[in-house]
Length: 226
Image 1 (cartoon, helix red, strand yellow):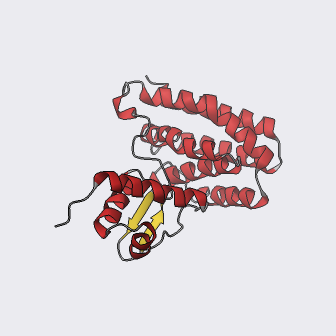
Image 2: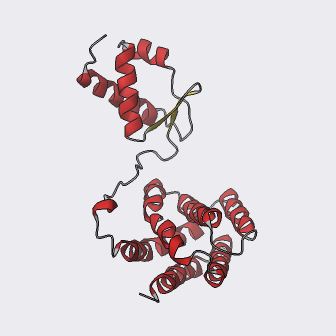
Image 3: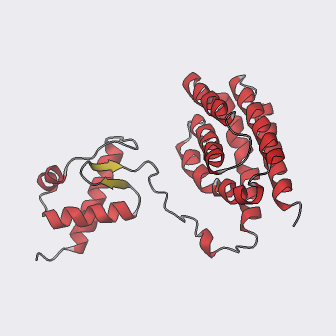
């Protein structure tokens, strides 16, 4: 069995990262094959495989058996990038919602200023899908996440687009507190429609206001019985 040179594997992983960045590869783009990488970097197969393991652990690539290796759809975002599992769990949900309160309204404001027509159409499609639900459940919660992530993407700011999925952990945590609460769902849906209309009409001040109003109401819904 060939002994793997760990340092060479880390160097190779770094070179693959550089390829992704320099070629402006996007999430879902396919990387060169294992054989092509061996030829490109002049290293052994075990070294390439170890480098791929490193990048996979960092969530930079997605290895799909039988299909190849692709740029991860959530590059750099691991299960707990902020170390939230080590935070005060008793106040975590409240702290996450407060973080959203400070950040998300500004993101919504920016989206109302910058969203392209195709991005507005995508938001409208999400709103349309939401009409199929009348209560919070796993599917409606995922649509909620998709809606807020799409708003972040509409800012055109790649940093915000990467930060929002982390903050949106609060949505999924809040889901358990409001599950099967029809009144809460209806308020959330109405709020999403108002936010969408404000973005569609380029009314950035209303977009910001409705976003802040929604988060404050979520805080009230979740902690009213605390």
